[in-house]
Length: 196
Image (cartoon, rainbow, N blue to C red; front, top):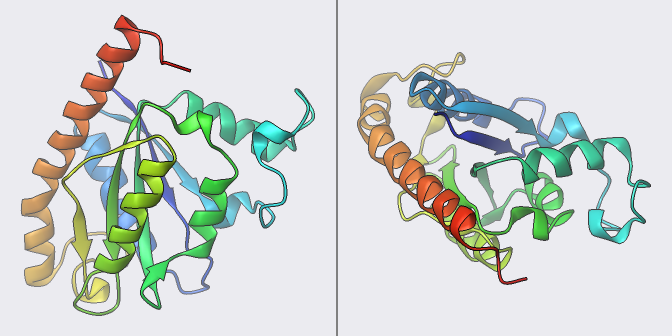
């Protein structure tokens, strides 16, 4: 039985390099039989956070917010694909994430980071770990960092060069860990109702 996984991506830039990594992750998870949906913060286009989804009276949230809330609630796990901006996280992805809270609870999240340089978005990955934990997700220990992204993935998201080979070697362990936590969380939710 496949797991429902949302791959979330947040760059708003016109020449988005991280989309290569998002496509690689989507294709890799689908190749393992997972049911994957892509959540592109730029395409959804939520406004800067003023009111969280839960702060709207029932049935009055904007359509895009209502649809996304349903997708998040229906997911078994999440993969956050994040670039690093000035040692920090992408504002577009953070803004999308902050529109919700309880919808994320008791599901695992994995972090995949990238940058144009050799540090592979490691500082953004570290920042996301605390953020996602605070929002009620279990952050899996396996991460993927890609950099320089242009020398690791082609425009189509295919691995290239030595960086691409390293990415291909690291992906199965990453996906296995995410799958293990998804199955553990599903079993726990089926056995026992969440505490609140």
